[in-house]
Length: 280
Image (spheres, rainbow, N blue to C red):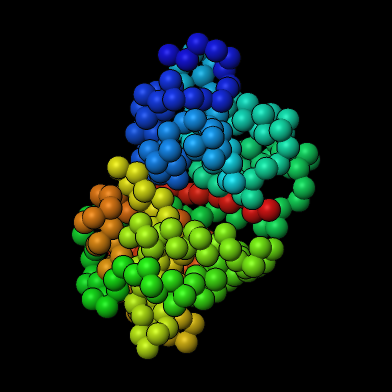
């Protein structure tokens, strides 16, 4: 039981209640569960605050507030409380992301107080694979080795720029993004097919909990798209992720990207929800 006000910053003494809530929806909450399992709830170690909404002392909703604002299991009252807190502290995040209903509710309450976003992606299918892929994986897709960072990085930058609309090398010359890609490689969570020193296909597992993981950064070289390389690559990544990382493999994709959704469905992913992203 949480015995302070209905909304507050959680700490390690709240861990059991947080774990219980995250376990209710392991796929939708994996971005938050991944951070909590890796760093606990202390804001200094977490690199963010985890807000809890407990109107009668019982934790019912969460919201991670850091580089991203990520609500979990947040109904209208929780969204109102989280938006009020976010409004008071001012915008510190680069995105609001998560369950579409909660994200759009929170953003609707913040739109008049925060600066205009670069993009609002209000319908992003959340997809799940929790069984063996339906098609054979590409045997050439493998984990990227640390010495291959400079081979993977140009493809990662190209993917990010294509997806987000600007290069991650802007501002600091790409140092932080390079460090993040290197971290994923070191953790064994970056996968690619590399031919003649260039990436043909790549994907990373960006968030990992005991129950689920989330694939991100899926990219096929533009000149090779439409030939099934991405489908076979995703089948390989999903199979290995289920074998060695987590039993449930998820991802979310833009609604307009029909080709990607078709490829994921061919692999065996099915839609289990809808995400939204507000990008600043």
